[in-house]
Structure formats: C-alpha cells, structure tokens
Image (cartoon, rainbow, N blue to C red; front, side):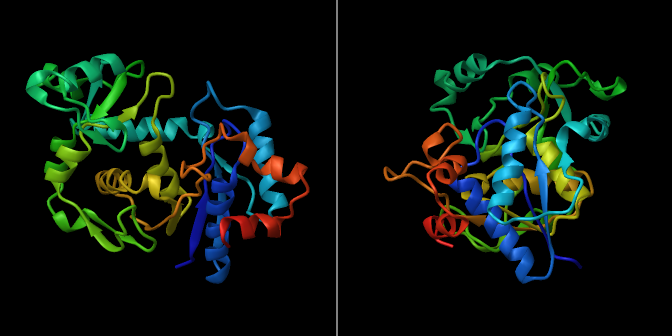
Length: 293
C-alpha cells in the first residue's frame, strides 16, 4: 500500500508557522516512506474563503519547497458527494434537523437540572433538544432537508455498530495527554463527551467532520497528520468512517506551535504569517529551524 499524507488548509486567512509545521511534517513523512504528499483546499465555508488566500497558500507552500500532484482537490467541487452521504445517513434514521442556535444550546445546557455545561470537540455538548422533539417520527420517509442544520444521533449511530472493536484508531504521534498507540473508545464515551454533532450546516450543506472523512477516503490517505487540537475530533471521524464503510487511516497528531505566551497560533496572528517571515528575509531553512524541524 502506498504511504499517502495530506495537508488540508482553508483559504480563509494567511498560513502561519503552525500550518508550515504540519505541512512539512506530512511532506517529510511521505518522502521518508517513498509515498505521496497531497494538497487539499478545504473551502466549504464560502462566506470566508477567498481566492487570494488560496493563491497565497500555493505560493507559500512552493516557497517552503513542498510539491504535490495536480489537480488539487477542492471541497467546493464535491458538494454532491457530501449530499449523497447525508442522504445515506438520513435514510438510516441517524440524522435529524435542528433549529437551535448557539444561545438556545447554551441556555438549555446551562439549565439548573443539567448542571454545568459539558464541553466536547465542537464546544458545548448539544443537550438533544431537537432530537427529543423528533423522537418517534420516521424522518427517513422523505429526503433530507437541505435548508436546515442536520445533527447525527450519536446514541442511535453507535447502536448500529455491532463490533465495538471498530471504534479505535492507531495514534502514531500523541494526544494532548500523551495518548499514543491504539486508542479505543466506547459508545457511552461518545454520548457523554461528544454528543449529537452537526453534519450539515445550513449555509454549507455539509460540515468539517463529514467532509474530511469523505475526502480522506477519496484521496486514499493512509496517514492523517494534524495538530493535537483535533485529537478529540478523531473519535467522530472514526465513527463516521464505520457508518459510511470507509477505511480508517493511521493518525499522527503533533504538538501545536505556540507564541511566547503559550497561546496556539491562529490565522488572525498575522505577525506569524509565513508571508511576513518571507518579507522580512527569512529562508525556508529558517522556518524549519523556528518550528523545530
């Protein structure tokens, strides 16, 4: 099997040192295994994606010395693929529409009988308000609505998995708590620490969680390289891979690049943008040294 890694940035701002670190690790791993390094543009957020940021991604990565085969996979070209996957899950009775906004969710999760709101990979764990409203209704008799938020019924989804051993993945890096090796999780853990996650947003027709597993499978990714901030989301991705009969790659979660105050870098940190380092006269070798490679 060919060793395949990828780097999947969103064209919503400048690439910073953390992006360069992740991309270079993925490229270095593929090269060391005589494999392939792929680039994917995750542009499902059409309200924030900009062509000039996509052009800057290509320019910065080329400057760093990274190469990849063409054409580049772009998520905006694959909306029909995501829609078919949603229809499949809908017909299985695993999705339901959600009308709650963030304020509703925060209020319901903070109700006195609920105790302190629990946090999961996507923030406050959804309290199941709309799931309870739709309980007992066979939603699968009609096509899934494309103008509403759709959530995955985690409990029902886990009940369809007859082999609990499939709920695991191989961690070659480490999680935030040093987790490594074979990482297993249970349906109970998914219910209590993840909850009913969003698989389709009203303005996108999909979500990061759904798109990333479908894209990784389509590109034949064998090793996913990404930051430790996405470690907890991996359980969601493995569950979706099982539900959609997709292969589960190995994962390599790496340390996050942080500023002097210990805060992880974000796209708003223009001072750490690769373009800024280039303008100040840094070389690709300097970037490698700065991030510890």
